[in-house]
Amino acid sequence: MAWKATGPLQACKLLLVILSLPQGRTSSVLTVNGRTENYVLDTPTDVQASLECAVLNNTSDEELLWYREDGRVDLKTGNKINTSSVCVSPISKEDNGVRFTCKLQSRQEVSVSVVLNVTFPPALDGNGFQTVEENSHVNLVCNVNSNPPAQMTWYKDNSTLILEKDRHQIQETRESFQLSITKVKKSDNGTYTCFASSSLKTETLDFHLVVTDKVPALPVEAIIAACVVVLLTLAFGLLARRKRIMKLCMKKNAQDTETAL
Image (cartoon, rainbow, N blue to C red; front, side, top):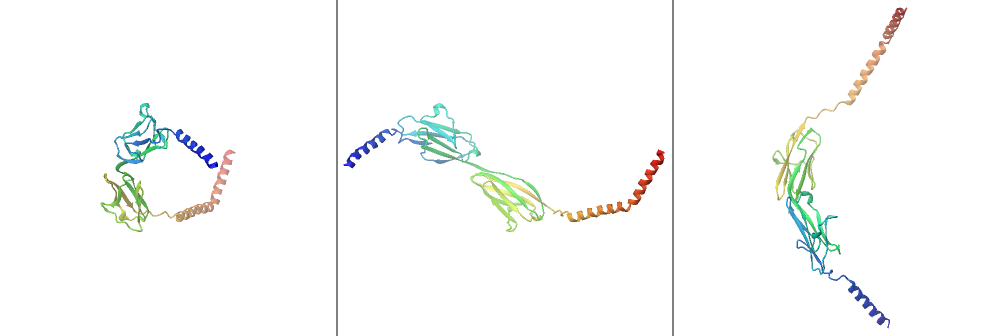
């Protein structure tokens, strides 16, 4: 009997919950440029990227929100309801990896994001002229900015650099391509070329390395010893002439006394 009493009550509660749900919203779908899921937009630099967000299957007007990363984009009054567009113009390298997200104001968990993949050819820079002493250490750092990432190679005097295991080391990151040379020799003197190749362009940057003779280190101990010898010689010289200096001083004082009388 208890089951018969509670069963209809539970059914009534479930019905009330269903009736209280917002009508016409559960089927609303967002699209950005016709896509219903997050995606990556490939684009070159110096062009305009237009992103259009629209609501599908809605039974009432929906207000839309746009975000650039975590910051909200200000939209004009006529660019908020049911459809909304944002433009990025012109596209620059700094826009690479930036995420734009369109959301429903009423249910912000409903959203579609677009990440910009900005492609651009390699750009190189670095210290193009360096002077280093023989038997020391030097780093040639080629800074690179490229998307897609470039294939990097070092050349010396227009030929592929032959790496010596004990003296050459190459370190590569997304932002730099570094050649380190230890125990520099006169034969290391020359022009080193940083070569960057991508599907968009090939770029090069020259580094001129001048190897000079090693300057002999100053014999610090010998200099200190010489200074000590000089000081001691002066001191002994003054002591040796002390009596003469004292006699001259006494004679001068006597002359000054006679003059005063």
